[in-house]
Image 1 (cartoon, helix red, strand yellow):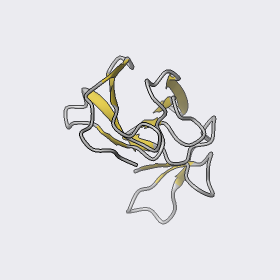
Image 2 (image 1 turned 135 degrees about the vertical axis):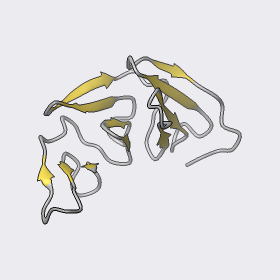
Image 3 (image 1 turned 90 degrees about the vertical axis):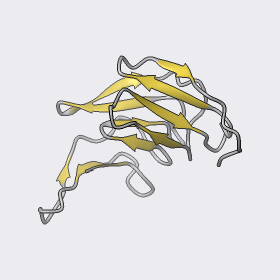
Length: 118
């Protein structure tokens, strides 16, 4: 399990394996991440990085985008089992919006949310 950022460890990244006594510490994140989401190797948004996404790839953090369609922090995300896209939904300043990141790292607006989220 990849664990990134958070309060008290804004730049941290590590791999946790339940059969090991200690985590594997990875290269630090290039920017602060707090109130972000993470789906597999993709992490998006955060209080300090509201419109960007990164991906862990072969020992380094690759920038996916800095052009999310809305500020995303305190939001939720979901990647379907087929891994075709990742949905980013709601958040502190983007209450009723969503967007999708496709396999080619393209970002587009998605469906409106019926209820306000925070």
